[in-house]
Length: 312
Image (cartoon, rainbow, N blue to C red; front, side, top):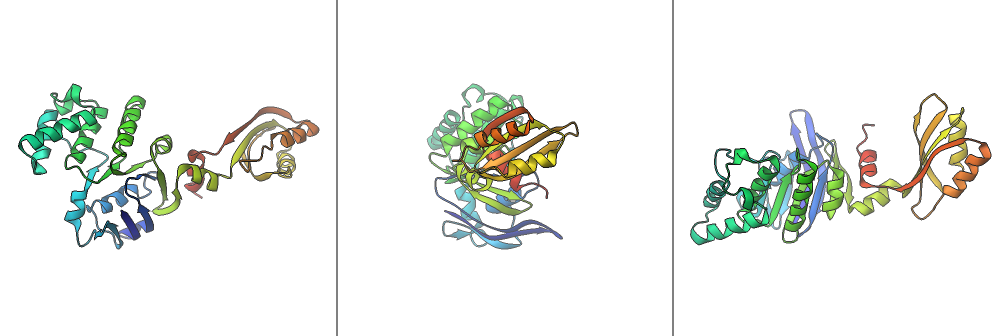
């Protein structure tokens, strides 16, 4: 449905986007992940025809952003990070104003507003002034605004930014509900949100795509399977590393800390199907090291994200 091809964006000498290529399928919930400044918002502004790329293009169905920007804008509902709301207006009056701008009137306007009030959970505040609302409710009003024209695609820039944990859960559930009928693209750096909500994620770092796929596949592909976290007391960190690296099934070993107080903490990576704990424990016991922590965990999107966006 959406095809991003060779997308580049320069601000003077600074290259914000570097040859982005990816597609978004109809009915998919796609998460754009990346640290602050990675290029997520720039990508969304180009997708919604608010910015033009320096090179490359985006096609939405058969339309491209250069030749058919108005057609594409009609297909997309866009909620920027700070929803552009008029605080002095009542929620119902504001939604009526938005509906009128979208060309709705009479019974059609009333029906559409009522549908969005129900969908976005605005019944309790529909007759309150917007400036009186919590940020969570303001985001809901912004979502209703973005969906007023019944767009095929919904683009949300950091939709849960600044919300408390309960509000985050509510907006996340709302996005999943909307995603049953529409294509949804949203940016975030909250990894639990992406794991719980998205069908697929695209991870961007310094303007370039570093990973693209379902969260489970990325964790398996980039994370190296399972990890055993070990904390030992030993006067020789190099010996610990050397001995444990030779254990059958160990694919990679990463020293997390050496406090200088004979404590060594490390993450030992293996295939998801291999449980290397018995072999590790035998080596630790034979060497006489004091074992302070020893547990196995599966790789998560959080670990993958940290690995792919690490500064070095």
